[in-house]
Amino acid sequence: MKKDSRVKIFLDSVEVPLKLGIYEHEQGVSQRVIVDVAVFADAKGYLSSVHAGNIIDYDTYYHEIRSWAKRPQVQLIEDYLKELMALCFGHELVQACRVSIRKLDIYGPDQGAGVEVFITRAEYESK
Image 1 (tube, helix red, strand yellow):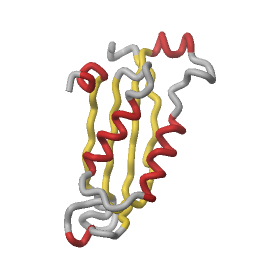
Image 2 (cartoon, helix red, strand yellow):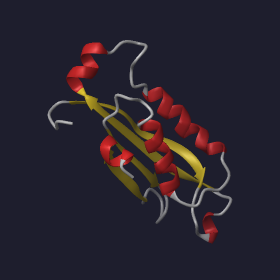
Image 3 (spheres, one colour):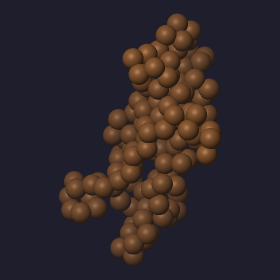
Image 4 (tube, helix red, strand yellow):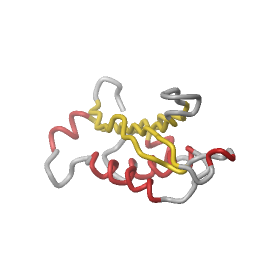
């Protein structure tokens, strides 16, 4: 993937309440989490052939992320990140993705911490 030849499809700052964490004070309690997703495709190839039937649809990512709120306790952010990367690479045109999950109030109001991953399809498929 050429750095200067890509299209970015993204979701910015999707807030979702999740039961997430390993610490005692996090058990069974929802906390505010922000999820960002960006997927990258070859710009020329994608834009020259894109139509309603083959778009990389950020709506798919949005609804999956929002569905996480219904889940029971998950221990690690990384578990959600792995699931999100699999969803991103489920579309054949996605060449790379950047996904991040941030707990918003971990060290006080609006003081977050989280995990971000940038990975190419080749790296993802070689794991």
